[in-house]
Image (tube, rainbow, N blue to C red):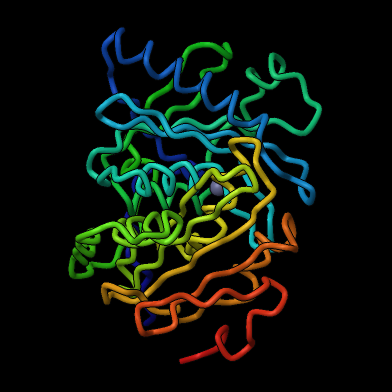
Length: 312
Ligand SMILES: [Zn+2]
């Protein structure tokens, strides 16, 4: 006799899956006001987005415990687009913020040319993608994710760790950041890239990378490698997006520095794709790379030797 499979349910109804409910975080009125302002900053950041491919413009703002706000649009500078949230997080870390000191992240999404007021109440797309959610989670699962409520004005507050039930997570030994340089390099662009390198977030490879771009006006913007989710944010692209967030896209010089020695090394896995973010905007830019003896060699961006881009 074939025995029946044990029946584990006493009900006769059909089993429709129950969507998981994520509880909102209860916040004080003061905090909610701060978070509504954070959304406004994301709305403003969206106007700087660079979206020639998708035409979907995103703004994101990250609030740190000390009250500083870091904002970015999404930047489609290479086939690998950087999302607003990932860039805003990278700007905060590049400025010296510690992951545990990042408090909240807001996002605002609207198509190119869309009415911002109408977009505020369009809920279906007003949220972070899964990749960014994973990035926020890996940097600090206690961060608050701020989403607009359906009235387009109030906010809903969620804990990042609650937004990814059964989140992918790998225990990795903590990678301490490099010590900042003991003295400033005489070239301020190199000095800034070395400082940026010491702020990289590289739990996967333990290979810090910092970059700095100098505009034709002599302003310097930095970027760092941030390794989260399935897609790491490259220092060069972060530095370029940082400049473009400030309305600058004419780059005169760029420095990229990896390794952990004081004088720096050419980063492993430096790829043409990373340089393309700058080359697209400024094909005349010069790229300074460490020579391995404490100096830097300058190459026109279009002529960075191929062997440098593929070495080990
Ligand atoms: Zn995203």
